[in-house]
Length: 85
Image 1: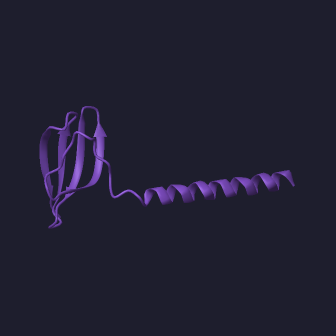
Image 2: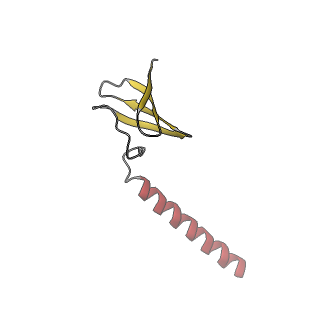
Image 3: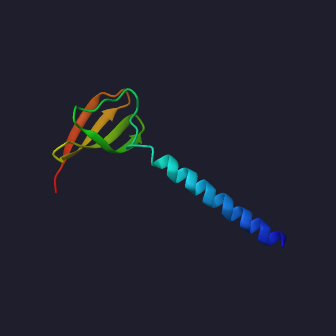
């Protein structure tokens, strides 16, 4: 009886935490950028990778062109690579 009650309580807790987590994920509109980093007008971040002393951002513009933009830790652009398919 104790084991059944414990397992039931554990399942309720896990389902509740997953529900809360999924609801919180629905509120975000994309990856978050460091506050001192700005992207060119019309581009949205698709993915962000943080490294030691650098930040890589995959962006997409209104025409669907994707680019990998590399910034230093201060937010200064270093390089840009266009992604072709």
